[in-house]
Length: 402
Image (tube, rainbow, N blue to C red; front, side, top):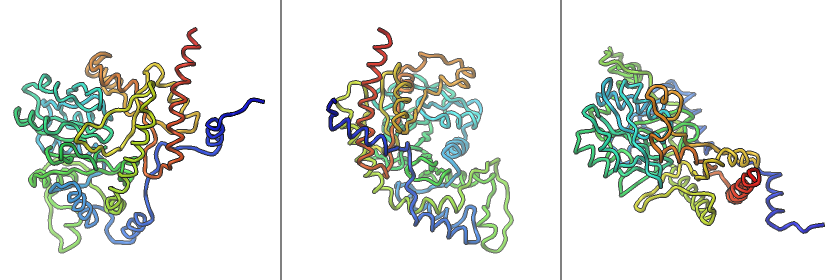
């Protein structure tokens, strides 16, 4: 009878008992109690609880105004409208993001113009932007991918030179900093997501932060049909008539969503510290593996650590995904390059080779579990399994081609 190594015995034992979900939220009893309090109150829609969250979120970011909305997609959409961007205009953005970024530009009636990304971060390559600017360019829409901020100082310099607006897609980046800058501090507006898998979540939800009071007022009207007064203003005191001042949308955050977010905001730094510790263990664990590459956090930056991705051989990526799932590890792909998705290929005629760096990342990336409730044992299991699977996948391919 052969002798089994200690590591193999450990892996076999863990596989029998462990399932590592891709994501588990960090909702606590106190968050639920705040929601129950709202449900037991008179006012469920946009009201005082939303205002409280907006004030506290602004303080956390160091921005003057926050406007709560139903999603980051809604935030991007009405931020464009609030800055007068629409039909005939172009917005420079990245193909390495979730489809909502470019879709919001189309919803506003404008045209997304893609610029390729940095190979080490996946963020928009600032050095390529000026070549994409035309007389129709009205805005830059950088995406702080996976929680790592873009070079906002470089972007601000270009925007000022060409008279452009910056609308940040900060869906991944609530806690991020770079060069001492937070989201919303150099951009004209920063848009955030509180989707189910985000670092703070209300299931669905979003926000826009800005330092421009005129824009903030316009955003409040655009999120609610273009009305001059919300329900809280109409019904919390003596009735006042309202007007419709512009064509708006139904994008307003409810008190229920805001209640779920408030206590999470108090825990945001503690939860970030846990994710940072997990990411450092991942980076250390994969550092000697030639089959995996981790994207970089540039010097002078603090990543929000929203997603942790590794890049593998694109020819083996889908095989690795399947094998990790077979080992009961939840995984995802964030993201396939937008310009190669059917809608964008057919609408704009993009083809492979248009943005090769984004394509390489999109073909290679695997997102691993990352959330505060992840245990040290689960992290160890993920690291070891990724190591074994990437090595085994390579051997299997070589064997199959022999």
